[in-house]
Image (cartoon, rainbow, N blue to C red; front, side, top):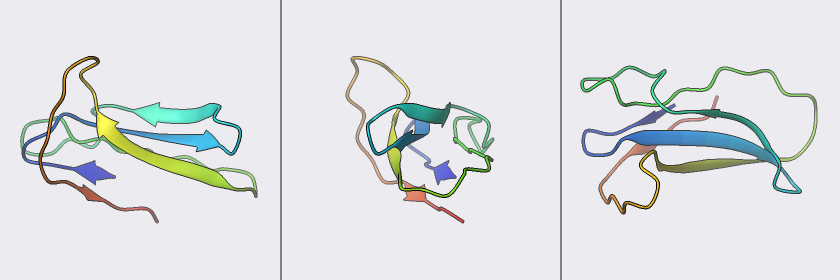
Length: 69
C-alpha cells in the first residue's frame, strides 16, 4: 500500500528480469482517492516493489509511505 497526501500514488511489483507482474493506481482509496494498493499472491521468488507517481511525464514530489506485508 502506498499512501500520500500529496502524490497520485502508483505501485508495482516486477520480477527480477523487470517484467511487471502486477500494478495499481488508485485501489487504496485514501483522503483524495489516489492511494495505491496491491493485493496479490506471488509464487516463491525474488521480486521488486516499486513506488512512483501515476502521472506519466509529470514530476511530482512529496512524502509518502509504502507498506509491504
